Image (cartoon, rainbow, N blue to C red; front, top):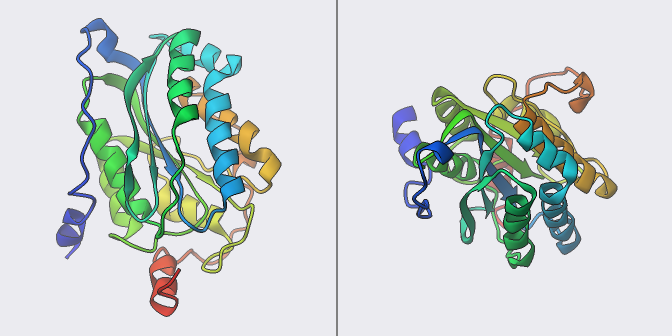
Length: 260
């Protein structure tokens, strides 16, 4: 049954074409996928803050310095937005960032892209699509990372644990940016859900956003951690140890409230 469910993971999503690059440029410190939630549980203000956070983080000198301080001095990055499905029009193809100019070029593409929210929350589809992007490109990175943000649990598509486990088995690290600015009806402890059901791989972490004012600094901090390889302090995830999270809580909630 697990094999059958695994086949459900975003098999119809199209991957963007990867530009042809020279042999030397294929070797990077990190292959980084930015997977950003635009589901209808977030409002227009949160969409705007989240987008601004990524744009400003990519332009920030601390992020650029973190990239340049790596052994290769460059990373490869791609970006997409997701809800119940991956928003194909939101995919920014792989690009090498190895300078202020290349970081600005990527940020500029993101800054002008329209934001299109949608219904449903399929973290599993987003993780599966991100894994395919990492498996089918021309780069060779010391680390392969999916950086996923969201404010609610998986409620459509295959179970999120299957997508997570499949990605981790391929050597992919999944880091989480759970957004707790507004509580969702299905789950209040989305930080614990991300920690137990979504993230995985060596050195993976969860960095919650609890206030709207934290979007920009938290996103910048997370990107710097991912490209620098530095392990952050334990306060990244300050949650109480209680009963394990039910990783199917979103699917069960949607059975009761199908309009969500």
